[in-house]
Length: 115
Image 1 (cartoon, helix red, strand yellow):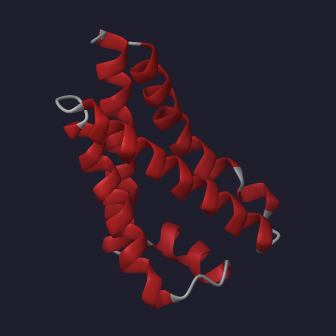
Image 2 (tube, helix red, strand yellow):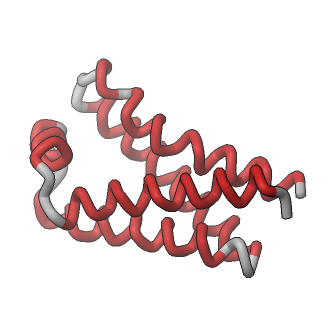
C-alpha cells in the first residue's frame, strides 16, 4: 500500500464526510443549491447518509480493499448523479463542485486498482 494511496484515500474520505456533515447540519451553501436544483427535501438525509457511508467505506477500504472499492464506486456514481442533477437544473456553472469531490475518489480508486 503506497503512501499516495493512503493520503488520497483519507483526503477523499474527509471531503465526502465534510460534504455529508454539511447536508446533515443544513449548511446554507449546500442546502440552498439543493433547493434550487429541486432536490426533494425528504431526500437530503439519505444523500448525506450515502456520502457518510461512502466516506466510512473508503477508510475501511484501507484495511479491507474490496470495501474501499465498493465505497469508491458508490461515491463516483453519487457524484455523477450530482452532475446530472446540476445539468438538469441548467446551472452549468455549478458542474465543477460535485466534480471537485469526485476527483480524489477517482484518484483513490485508480491508485487502489494499480496497487
